[in-house]
Structures are given as structure tokens and as C-alpha cells.
Amino acid sequence: MARRKDHTREELKALILQSAWQIVEEQGLPQLTARNIGKAIGYVPGTIYNVFPSMEILQLHLNGITLQRLSDHLEKSSKATQGKPLEKRLQTLAKAYLNFAMEFQPQWMTLFAQDLSEIKDREQWYKDLINNMFSPLELILTDAQKSPASVRRKDQIRKDSQILWSSVHGITYLWMTGKLPITDIESQQNKKKNSQDWEYMVSRLINTYIAHWQNEK
Image (tube, rainbow, N blue to C red; front, side):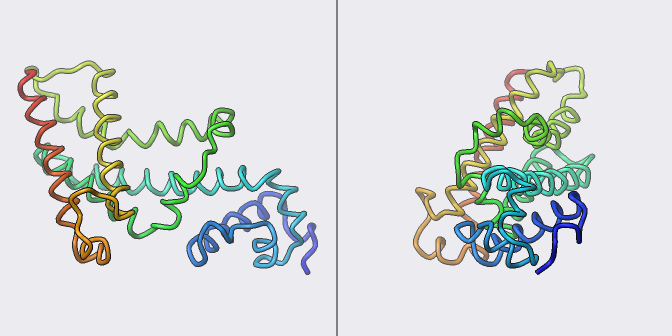
């Protein structure tokens, strides 16, 4: 059994979070316990609590890693489509969100598995991560309004990005959990091969938004 002095506090923190990521990936959130983490990294469970006072705080930090990876993934998608039509950019960004949710489904689902609002409200770093989630979408909408005929206030772009992101997330969450109203049983059982329902709803959402924006010009 390794002793506490074998790693610095920061090294131990990284080791714990790496182990937590793998446990959620391979065994699911219910198996994310101090005992299982300690067993995986060679420390007693009490050492885990010396770094993270509670499993809820540990989970918040794990969610932070997921959010940062998701933000980086979306930012890359947003930048890769610069210069393309608005509809194409929005659809590509939405698909990037879906692809991330599918690739890292256990960690993505963990983001919404437990109410950590009391802890979140005390952690500014976590609030910043959530705010950064909207940046790639804001970049796309900002680029689209460079024409003088479609100039919008920054606060309106912010609101629009929140509405669009929340809508795409809602559709994605329902589809991933098999609760999308128009999804049939075959689609629920074979998500990777059948995303037509998701694509149809997101496409309708984006087209409706663009049509509304154009009417406002």
C-alpha cells in the first residue's frame, strides 16, 4: 500500500481524478467510491478524503474535466468551420456535441446525474467552465452578424447561444436516454447507426432559428 508521501498533493489529486474518470468509464457512476478509487491507486480511502472532503466535491471536479474537454472539442469544431454558411456551422457544432456525448457517454451523463447545485454555487471556477461552454456558439453567431444589416447586441447573441445550446442539449439528452418522443424502439437500441431522428429535430431547430433571425433583419 502506497503512503501519502509517495506523491505530492497535486500529483495525488491528478491520480485520483484519473482513476475516477476510468471507474466511471468502465464501471459507471455508482461504483465511484473512495474505496474503489483508493484500491485502484494504492491508497487507503481516508487519503481520498484528505484531498477531496466529500465524494460530491470529487464528482464536481470530475465534471469539470468533462466540461473542459467538451469545450475544447466544440471550440475546435467552431474554428474548423469558419467561413462556411451559418446553417452548416450550427449543424456541425451540434453534431460535434452529439459525438462527444456518444464517445464519452458515462462521463457526459455524470454531468446531470446528481444535483450538485449547492457546491457549484460556491465554486467560481466551475461557473467559469459553464460560461465557457457557450463561447464556440457565440463565435459562430458573432461571425454571422458582421454584415451591417444583421448587427446584434452582444447580450442578444449571448441569449441566443444559451437558447440554442440548451435546445440542442435537450434533444441530445432525450435521444441518448431513449426518451425522444419520435424515436422508435430500433433507434433507441442502435444509436450509433441510427441518428436520423436526432438530425431531423436539430435541423428543424436550426432552420427555424435562422429563419427567425433573417426576419428580424
